[in-house]
Image (cartoon, rainbow, N blue to C red; front, side, top):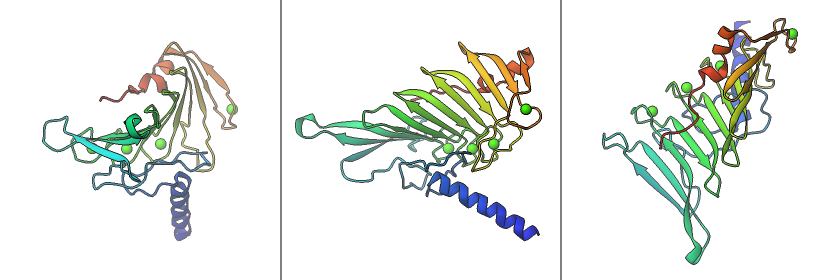
Length: 231
Ligand SMILES: [Ca+2]
Ligand SMILES: [Ca+2]
Ligand SMILES: [Ca+2]
Ligand SMILES: [Ca+2]
């Protein structure tokens, strides 16, 4: 019985890895429920958990020490775009060690035009990605966050024009790899939470609408850290 349960758990973990299509060992990927398409990554890895790595000719890697301990904590990967006199280097990947433990905690991937495309961050430094940010036309379009630190996304914040407009949250951790099951819906106007809907009986539909001050203060938006990366 117990063995069967363990097998089931192992299977779920493996499924999660397949869904993310991610081969890198460290940092561990976070599981994004309901995401059927494999996510692309920059591939490969450094001994510091880094992923900004050349995957062909025409790349250039630069490392910087911004903390003053003589160990580089920021790595940038540039790609040569264009040819001849039009050739130029474009930033395609940037990663940083934010807490000085020599392991990279945040990586941002850029389009060939040098605009932000995707960012993955390990905000609590446990070696596992807990925040994935997606960009559209250079602006944040979606953030998926594992606020509970259990390896499964439980909060999705949707942006329009770079501004958060609503969020879906799985407060009861019911989501699986195959299915995103939110039970709370939050709506934002001008950076403020204006309305929260809660599914109380678990049927996936809102049963209660709140404009209660205390609940609004505990919204995903209120708890959200800055989406900007320090350069
Ligand atoms: Ca680190
Ligand atoms: Ca983490
Ligand atoms: Ca979680
Ligand atoms: Ca309901």
